[in-house]
Length: 258
Image (cartoon, rainbow, N blue to C red):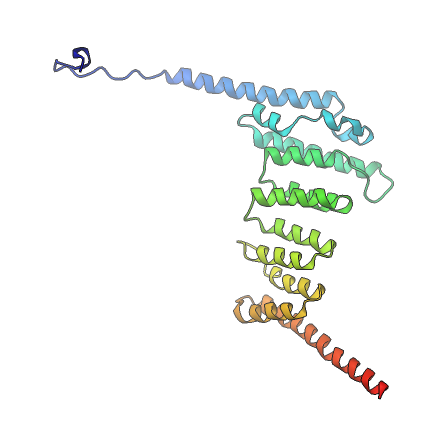
């Protein structure tokens, strides 16, 4: 061991040098100012181009929107504020396009990229995903399903997104998958009681009454919610009516042949 590294005296070692807290706070303030300036610069550039609200008449400007990755790198500490900005721009764009259109649902080529910008800055903004399901699902089922799956990946405990996924599958006639989505939604914290019998209703709609009956009977026995039990009993009565009507009609047909 080198002698120079050993303290042979009784003197205490000097305390470690501390950085000046004022210098550290100064760097932090500078970083915040630079990030805030970057956000303002991006907003100014968009408004100078006429903004996203007028882009319904200029669909070619879709490529002029910044990428979500670029926005996140420039908006250090201001993701939520910038997400609010693009969410307001999205709602403004939708409202203006609807006001100028002659049809019920006008074409909105910038809707999906604006929503993608919003959720890239704030992945927990459920309203952005749900607006995408409602508006994109009418004209572009694949984009709507991709967006709601993206929302579920970022918010696995959000039951409204599973409900929206079940809605999209119900529109496509994928009743078994819609029933599974309703079941998953019903198990999540804060889910309303009516989601549980909806899964059985989807199964019955898809031509699987026996499986629907099993699910309803189990819910009647295990659920502590009065509404769920009453709804399940009502659905069971409908299935019972359908079962009792089928043999009578077939019996009548059999008698006619005799």
